Length: 230
Image (cartoon, rainbow, N blue to C red; front, side, top):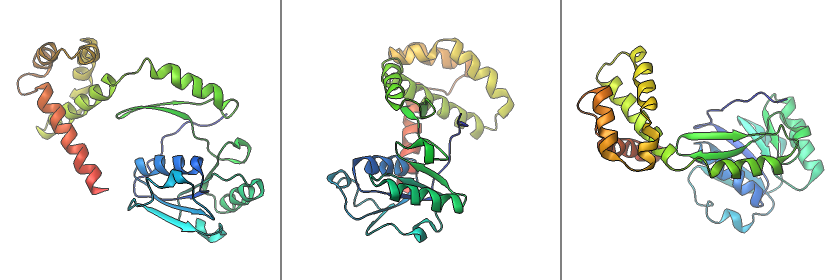
C-alpha cells in the first residue's frame, strides 16, 4: 500500500537516468511541474529532440555515476538495464532520496500514477503497482467524463478567489460562497458556454464586478506570467 501525496517540485533539482522514450516522458512531466532536470544516458532517442533545448534541462551523454545524485531532490531510473536500475535504487536509498524505477515497483519508494489533467485539475489513478495496464484503462475511461470545462471552471474559481483576496475579503467567508456557486451548477453552465447564466449566478452570489470573460482573461494572463518566470 502506497501513501498518496502531491509533491511540489518547482525549482527543485531532479535526476532522470535513461535516454529512451520512457525517460523523455518522465523528463517532460517533471519540467511541466517546474523542476530543473538533469538527464544522464549514453544515448538519447529521437524522443528528446523536442525538449533538448529547454533551458531547465541538462543533458549529460555519459554513463550514470553515483555522484549524479548529489543535490537532487528525487531520481527516476528509466533504463532497460536491470543491474543499473538496482544500483540507482541502492544509491538513492543510502541517501534517503525519493526514487522511482520505471515499471519496477519493487525497487521504488514512490510510484507514479496514471494521470488525467484538465488545467489545474489533476486526477491520479493507481493500482499500487499491481496492474499499470488497468490503471491506464481506468484513466482512459475517466478522460471521457472529465472534459475541458473542468479546466475553465478551476480557472474561474481561482480568479474569483484572487479577486476576493485582493479586495481584503475575509478568507473564512470564501467557503460558503464557493459552495453556493457549485450548487448553482456553474460547472454545467461552463460546459454549455452559457455566459449570461454564469454572469447572473456570479452577480447573485458575489455582487457586481465579477464578469466571466474578464475573470478568465485575468487568470490566463497570470498563468502566462508564471510560465514566463519559470
